Image 1 (tube, one colour):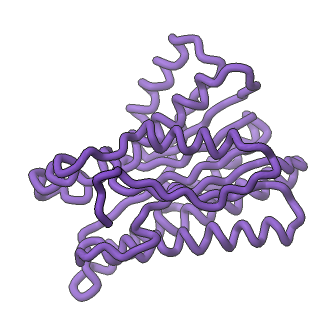
Image 2 (spheres, one colour):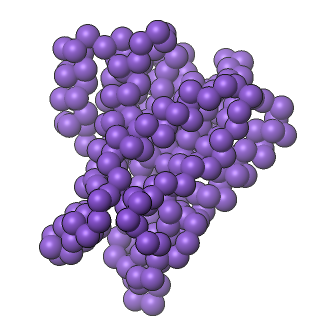
Image 3 (cartoon, helix red, strand yellow):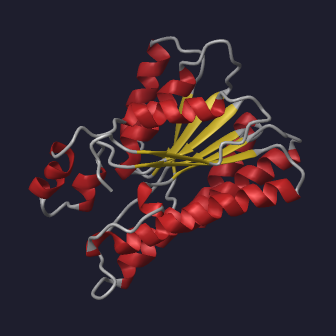
Length: 255
């Protein structure tokens, strides 16, 4: 079984915990857990640590610019050559720029759409085609979304980002419907966390580290491993169970 986890620098912690959960699985045949990111240095280190620990799976980093369709298609071609294809696809790459609706830069908006919406859609399409051509009928596509995809944050810096996450909510339900129309048992799930203590805020507020730190100091936040646990739970449900949406917040989070 081959897992594909699509990551970005902003989502490294969550993707790392998800990958760790997969490669350390016992009692399952795991050919490879392939993770893609533009910066593979940290992933290469993690892969070495997993190998040294003697885990049953193998973590294979792959450098890929998810804003470039050619890179994505090349990655799927490499996976086909090395592992026949993808059985589980986890779309976890995402980013936010401080670009309000009234004054934001088009390049920032476009980058958020390219990564948060188009890359997710391309990876979903290619993962499904990989499963279909190998007659895999029990695959799973999991989109790591955000609570920002279900309510608008009262902050101008977040509005366009939230719009891309609303798109992920719609895309996941659309995917579920299309999979049913295709009469397949491949499942689609959306996991929407609230505030998670990761690198995200520091990259989002890269010009104001104090503001970024305050995001995580105000309440007891979710941890990256909490999201990985949700992914493991979703994947562990019986084949007839479709979990369409998981919304999870820190207990202390208000909105």
